[in-house]
Image (cartoon, rainbow, N blue to C red):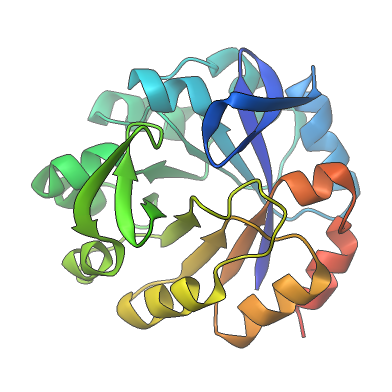
Amino acid sequence: MQIWPAIDLRGGKCVRLQQGDFARETVFGENPASMAQHWVSQGAECIHLVDLDGARTGEPVNEAAVLSILRAVTVPCELGGGIRDQETIERWLGAGVARLVVGTRAIQQPDWFRQMCRRFPGKLVLGIDARDGRVATHGWLQTSAVEATRLAEQFSDEPIAAIVYTDIASDGMMAGPNVAAMAAMKRAAHCPVVASGGVTTVDDVVRLAEVGMDGCIIGRALYEGTITLSEAIQAGRR
C-alpha cells in the first residue's frame, strides 16, 4: 500500500484543517518546497498536494507553491483543488504534476469528466469526499444527495488513475480512519482506491492495508508525530 504524505496549501503555506473547516487551521510550515524535501528525505515515494484556496475558488491559487515543490523534488506529486477545466489540466500536467485529482466538476458534469479521462488516460484521479456517505463538493462547503459508492460505480469503465476517498468526519481529527467506509468504497470501485482522513497510528495503516486499500494519505499525524513516515511505509508493506 502506497503512503502519500500530504501537503495542504493555503496562502502559500503548509496547513492542516480539521474536517475541512477553514476556521480550524494549523500552520505547519512557511516553505512548501522545504516540506516536500523533508518528506522525501524520510522515504516518501510520492506526495499528495492540495490547493485549499483553489478548492474554494474553483481555479488554481497556490501555483507558486506547487511549482516550487515540483522543482524541489523528483518523486511523483498528485494535486487536487481548483481543477475544473481542460486548460488547467493541461497546464498542470505540462508543469510536471504526475496526476490530478478532480472532484467538484466530476460530480457536477460527469460527461465532461469522462471526456477528460479518455483524453488523459491514467492521469486523472476521481476525488470523492464524503460526509455521512454523501458526496461533498466546493472544498467541502456543500453536501450533495449523491452516495459516494454510487458515484464511484458511475465511472467504473473509465481509464482513471485512482479514486481518493476522503471521509470528512475523520479528516484532521486524529481519531482513526473510517475503515468500514473505505472497505465499502474498495468493493464498489474498479480501480485503485486511496484512503484519506483520520490515519493516526501504525495500526490505522495496517487496518487499511488489511481491507485492500491501494494507498493512504497521511497529513496531521505526520506533522504532529503520532506516526513517522518510515513507520507508515513499513506498515503499508505488511
